[in-house]
Image (cartoon, rainbow, N blue to C red; front, side, top):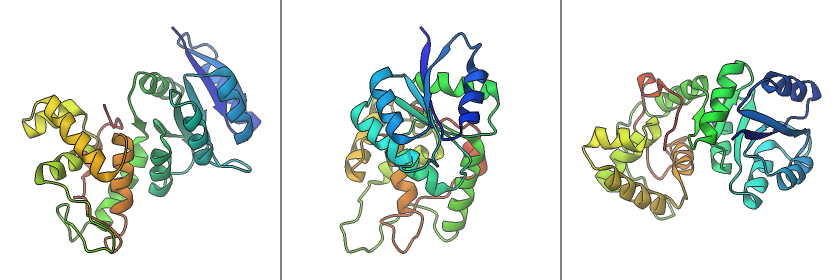
Length: 243
């Protein structure tokens, strides 16, 4: 079975180049392409692609808002952002919108194909250099903090148990459920139960939204509900958020 792909980018040459790059792939079929949000909504509905490869910056509605609208109507479609933006705010917003991938436009053909296949298989992939930027931001924001701590705020704080705090730290570092199980000496089913409790407390639906919210709440300690322990570069040796 081949993976059907829709390319969304406001530059015709980029669309053509991506289509040509993937033309001889036996596992991926480019079902269509377009250059703006309204066309993307129409083609997503008409073509029902497995994956949409989308730029962030487009005229009119940007890619992130377009992703929200598409996924609201077609939740089974997976969206990979292919962009030049490396800042953590963009990746936070992309994950929050429901993206399954975030890669940069200098990606090689083989890495692009691998990313599409892995996202289709259920993984969430983020470009390794973007993860380095996340690491740098966490390092900057977490110099005086070594654990998740409740902070005073007008709204009710997020209250996580020590075990949930530990699992959330592993989640932010990019560990899969099996890797968290190994690190905590807990059964995978127990890890999943803790994750469900974390999602409920954070008021999110999945691991990408949990990571996104953790990133958002840890950006400024004065405005955060808790602080995430800073990861190290070694924690991001792979760019797979996992399952």
